[in-house]
Length: 258
Image (tube, rainbow, N blue to C red; front, side, top):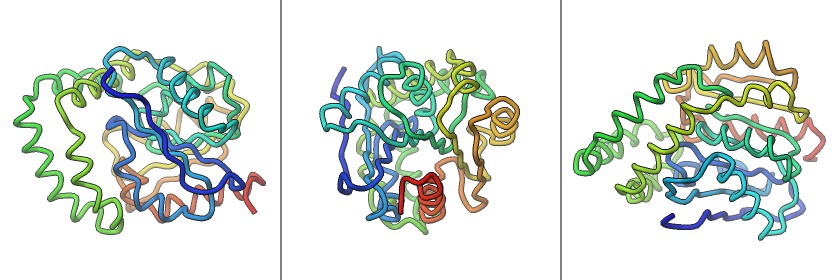
């Protein structure tokens, strides 16, 4: 393991706690505008994962629990983005951290196209770092349009690219393997905490139609599933104000925010 799991905290302890668990990239570099939109309304706890090639989903959950305990954070809402929806299910299965509610952002239970995760793993594993670097610089240029409504996120694009090392790529491939092998359907069906979900309309990575249908049919805890039509898979980055407004409403209606 090349580094430790890290957390950072924005906001005071008197505010309701929202714990952001990142997507496949594993860090907090794409949520700057979402963070700003939430400022003063919640205590936002952000997580960056280690570039581990060995952790199981249970290990990820244990790492999150340990980091929160070190900061005396004893309960909160979980915001699981994409890959981290799987860490959320592991946290619920362990049942050691008191979870007040769950929000999925581009998240899922069992991935609706697990073969796609396997193909992405194989394709990503064959990309040399030199080509990956070129692709990332192309991504940075495209991001000027993609994040045009999220200036804080756009400002962090170079930090996002700087973290995409060879080991980082291998860690992402490992996370794809965890997705392809995982089926947390049982815990999703039995969970007692309220569940909310949001996603972008343009999402070929985790097709929302299948995810929403499964949750509506099988998950009694589901309270609301919202599709933001101006966003894509990275819904917190491409529609930060709308996403933050939804999250604040959900927390307010739960009685956790006045």
